[in-house]
Image (cartoon, rainbow, N blue to C red):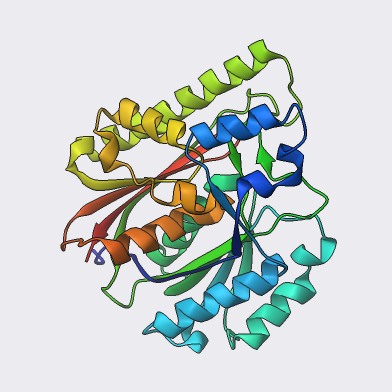
Length: 316
């Protein structure tokens, strides 16, 4: 019987736009949106990040940071998994643009793969896809990057008054060749296709039903993760979620029955919600700011409109 292939996450990197107070977002300064601003401040948001770069351009900057950190050379990258929800300019998702990115970074052997349907949980989807291909022996080294920027013509407000979108990119390498960084022990996902489109509902009762269903989806994926791994949430050194808001962090701590201090929240006031990039940015910052001993476990948790995902990492 062949030896089980292990997958490791290494060379975390990210790039954020410039920081601005959310109070400077024009749409939040016009009545009655002033009440929205007050609500967002109450749930921990203070600043957001904005850049003039396109998603591909800021993705390139993040990847350059990852490649500089990596022990793996660019020519040994087998695939580039590109995560985005930014399609407001058709060129952002064109073959020409992704091919140019691969060429300019000397990733000549990297086959491009796109991930987008899972929205803000797409990074964990990408990790699951890349891990599966590596374990199957199809690839050995996969570079993952998520990148999003918001058009000046679009709103940064995430309904229903949940958060503010930031411009950012984040990247890492998954590999079976080097035992460094974090071992990827587990990934899982859940979707509820019956949920309505939060961008179209306005009735307060429907919004409350949506929020209730969202919490139920979060509980379902977290309960399944604990059951699959036969673990107690208190075994995790840190729970690292997306930066939706502090209320969402408290919901996670309540579901898992852990103290709120175990949930990483430091970046919520720093840059609000960088969509799918939140997870890697938070993991990168936590890793650089706190001591993580070999064998310590981290739980990553992300969610989109009707998607939820978890991943469990063990420090090498």
